[in-house]
Structure formats: structure tokens, C-alpha cells
Image 1 (cartoon, rainbow, N blue to C red):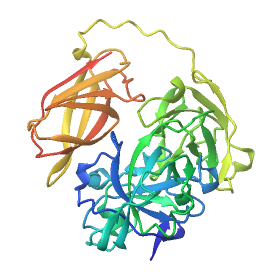
Image 2 (tube, rainbow, N blue to C red):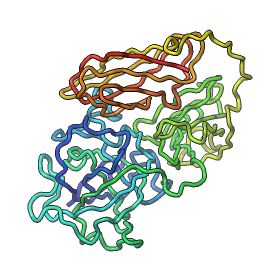
Image 3 (cartoon, rainbow, N blue to C red):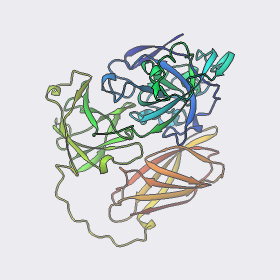
Image 4 (cartoon, rainbow, N blue to C red):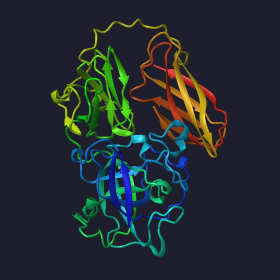
Length: 437
């Protein structure tokens, strides 16, 4: 059976059939940021990326591997209409494992499970594998393959909407799965009516070298749009150095490899020198904060014509054009918590969950180097579904949050925010505290 999938302006014809009566999990039951243990879902296949880009903003020829997959944009069991992309905070409960592009360029280890011996057509409001013998194990169970996240699945069917852990696999990869040291060779098509799989994020296998940077189609000095790929642990952000300060770059829609940066000087006037740092999926600056220095390729003066133009860069341990450092006065000690304060607000709520925005404000007289916040849920049954801009840990009702690699430095009198999606009853928080270094 066939399905048609639009990626940007490209139409990709995809053949597939899915997997697993996995259950209708509510959107807030998953953490799009990671899979701390293997998860089980259905696997379909698609023929390849659209033109010129897949959902992550890279052409197929520029991927680290031709073994690649797509993750769900939206997790909305029983609701097959699409919400605008990137999914806004108002619809945060619907964010799927694609995580608004934040899981692009991450690697996934996929393990083959049982094959569907029944009807598996992705029909709305129908079980994933119905009739026949259901899911049946065979000689291909246990085969594995490392695959890179390169695309997004946003079809209006049960495959992409009902199963939070569904993955769409590159068709040419199906017979590359390895069992007992050798590719399976003939799992597709005779033993593929869509299968169950288990999968988990992993560091890039056998990683060597450094990142790749390319200018995307249309990039030019007044719209410096770049694609960053080939990271050991995915990409969660790009910061560029401009007029003496680091600035968080804006992702190009939800294409998680692509960011719009600015020049070190001359913003808005066609400045030509760029310096960036990159944050990975763990919230850390890669290579200990290595700075990548470059100019746009010469052919991009009025807009790059190719979908991807490689950029040659040099590296340094700090901004090349940064001014000479000014000594910072030593602040009077204020006892830790006196240097920052934590406040919270509920920005959205729904049946069974809600979204928090928490603000860390530097109340001291000097910039912070880092911060740790803490609070308690009012209901012991409440749990964290997902979070961003901080690393969170929950123990019972107690939650602690540590700054990400890019937002620990907060100027005196300034603030930064982090967000949390919570499973639970929207009770009042208590014991809000903050310490800063």
C-alpha cells in the first residue's frame, strides 16, 4: 500500500506498513529529548529524502550515512490534523520525538522485532496490526543497525500520530540490518509488512573528525543560513559571536541542522566574518567550547544557488574578534542563593498536564558562571514529561535544574528561562530556590 508525504515543497512517495499494537499513549507520556532506555514502536519505510532537503535541512547526499530514519513531528493519538510547525508552546503536549528538530543529526540504534501478519495500513482509529496472526517473530528478530535522524514524519495517519515511538526507515537500509555479523540481505520485501522495532539514541558510532558546516540554498550576507552536521551527539543549538557577545542563533523553522547566524561585526550591513560555537543534545558546548571561524563561500554573495555549499573553517579556543578582556571586580560574597532568584508561571495547561516557564534572575552585582535551581511539586504524583534550556532531575516531588552549557552566564540584573512539560494536576509549586556561582 502507498502513502504520500510532503516534505517542504517536495512530494515523496512512500511505501509502508506499520507495526505493533503499542497502545494509545498520551502525548505527555513521552520525553522527546531522549530515550533513557530502549523503547518499542512500529517501523514503516520511505524511499528517500525530499528535494532539496529532508526535514532536518540537509540534502540526502550530505548525510553522515545513507542508513537514516524519520521521527514523528506530532504525537496526538486519535487526532490526525496537523498543527503548525514548529509546534508552539501552546501545543507543547503534542510534540513528538522529532522534538521540533532538536533530535536531528542524532544517532539511533534500531533492533528488529516481529513482523505483522495481518493488515497494517495506518488507518485512523484502527489497531496497527489487525486480523491474521498479528505480530509474529521470525529469523530476522534481533537484527540491528545504526541510523542517523535525517527527516520528520508528519503524515495524517495512525502510523505517525498514534504511536509515539514510530520510526520511518530509509527503504534502502532494510536489508542492511546486521544479524550474526552479516547483513540480513532479504528481509525486504517478503518479510516486511511493517515490523515492531526497539530503538534508543546513542553516540555517533566510530566518530572521528570535526563538524561539517555548509551554506544552504539562498544563504548570503544579509541572510547567513548554515547547516551544521556530523556531531558526536546531535545538535541542540548554535551561538554566534556578534559585537562582543555570544548570541543564540535561530533555527530555520524546525529543520534542526539549519541555523540563521550573524556576523561578528556589521550586523545588517553585510558583515562577512562569522564565529560560532555549537551545543549538543546534552546541552554542552562541543569540543570544550571550540570556536569555528569562517566566511561564506564566494559564490554566495547574492545567494547560494546550490542546496548545500561546503564551508571551510578554522578553529580557535575563543572569539577571534573579541575585545581585550576587562577585569571584573570581585563581588562581595552574598551567600549563593542571594545571587539569583527563581520564579515560575504556568503558560499552558490541558487535561492531565501543563507547561511551566521558570525564570532565573541574577540578583547579584556580577555575572554568574552557572546556576542551579530547585522546586517541589505540590502533588507527589506529578512527573516531568520533557524540559528544555536546563538539565532536570526529579526525586519524588523534589526537582533540581542545572543550567545548560549556553545559558549559565547571566548578567547582573538579567534573567534566563527554562521550560518544563509536566504530567499531572497543575498544583502550585513550593520551595523555589536558586544558587549561582
